[in-house]
Image 1 (cartoon, each protein chain N blue to C red):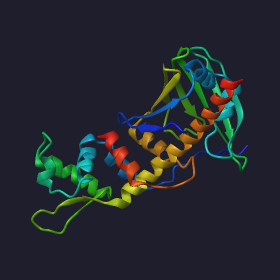
Image 2 (image 1 turned 120 degrees about the horizontal axis):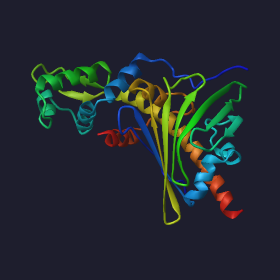
Image 3 (image 1 turned 30 degrees about the vertical axis):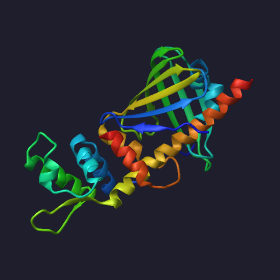
Image 4 (image 1 turned 60 degrees about the vertical axis):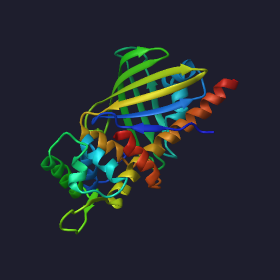
Length: 159
Length: 116
């Protein structure tokens, strides 16, 4: 069974994603920090693949991701690590080459383990409310399916 | 090399919708209206702000297409307008699908690592 993903907007510049994984956090941490593992899952929409996946895991070190879509076009981003506390926390500053996020974003990854399961909380702080809202609207994945149940949940989470 | 980005499709309506949703009082008003229509006076009641201030928020929500006002000259009750909300929800849904896809792949990878 798939664990549920929760998306909330705790402040007017942030988006938070929360998801439980059935694995200890050291293993989840590896999946976020080892290029050969990151390549396996951080892919975006169906059909996308990694062209570049390089990670220099140290404070002040950077990572570089470049993806390719099925049409051959590429999308790249770079991040610089600000905080690394294995296996529980990573803070990094991120910027896409095309800067479609309206300036640098700061990502905070927090891993909490309980009973062999890991809760992953990802918070992305955008440069502005407009930047965040644009990101929430990106057409990165296909598929529609507006549902008022989900909307009610979303609004409840905002209230 | 060609360059691609997950291009946000421009829509002034969506900008207005998300801007309107960015305010906690307006979100509270929408949550209240999700239960059924209400007059401005009824909407102002739970808030420690004046009726004119609430009226301003309602105008923003109305311009964003999130609510509509009834014709009844006395009350002009406010109600949620489904269309703009459905559109905003669709965008959020795409974001959700993107990450659900990534996380399902991570599930599979973690499962594989467990048995190796």
